[in-house]
Length: 162
Image (tube, rainbow, N blue to C red; front, top):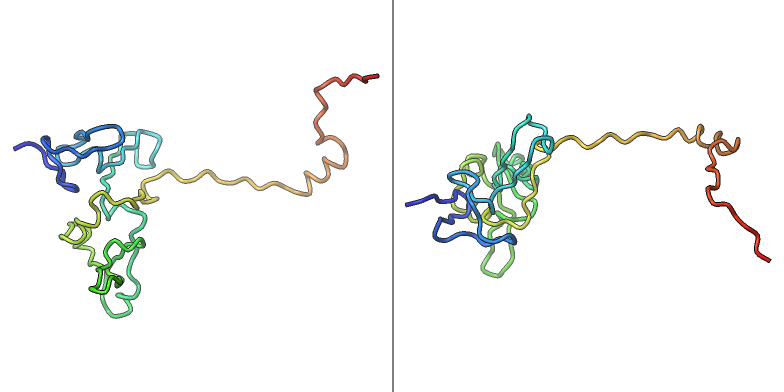
């Protein structure tokens, strides 16, 4: 038997269909449909290619479940998009969460939730920091404006028309 994707379960004979066509293998157990690939300079973890699996543990939508913590459960996590929320018989949902062990080594419910998740966003810890915003000294700009030094010279020569 050939490769099997650890996230979606696709194989060589049953590939995922993406916008670019059938998926390919980026690792022996990870298909291209279930991975985000960053080239050097696009991430902050060194000068090599970085492959992030589209797993809940790498997603920006994963947050600690404070309600579970207030009830005495430590290290429980939930999806802000509600991917772990069980559906009740009447169609409503109940907020659901899992212990980290169920997220880091996906149990069946987490595995179902992360399979082709439309809400996956790479966690910011993998991305380069955003460029710092420079602050403009408004008093300096106002001073230049009043003096006329901050004004652009008109590059267009105007001709009067009769």
